[in-house]
Length: 222
Image (cartoon, rainbow, N blue to C red; front, side, top):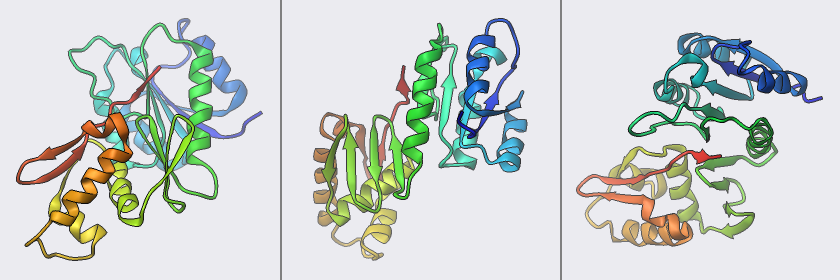
């Protein structure tokens, strides 16, 4: 029996969702919030380890609620059950499900996220990647890639702010502790190394001409 507290956002107790809700209740302490606004209040009140956003039960895509949770509680793991009936899914969740929902895969994803966010070492989850912050390790497909200090600092900043444009000035101030922007070739070289570390996903680290960079990350789709 796992006593971790989880927050379920949506309409609980309907016939369609009773199977997965029963499974969650057997493993976790479950709190319920029927709306996005109440979800924010519940996170502050109960400090859940993870949020399950059942947008299907709310008859809404839930993208706005997911972004609101991410903006307010950046390190809260989010699992998003999305109807998948929109032109473009813009969820800020860590893991995304679309109907039909497989309860076993949902439970496995929750366990994986809880383990990733636990432990003495701080682990950042960003798309399909994880980063062990104090040990400066990039983790992908179970393999660990060591990072040099500057690579690690850059990746940490991008992982903490996925899908956000980060200005070159901010990168220089944070990683190199300087406000000097006369010559940023060093930054350009390290950005290239970060892209190499991300392998095929390096193309998602976009150059925003004249401004900075943005790491475009989609939720994990189950």
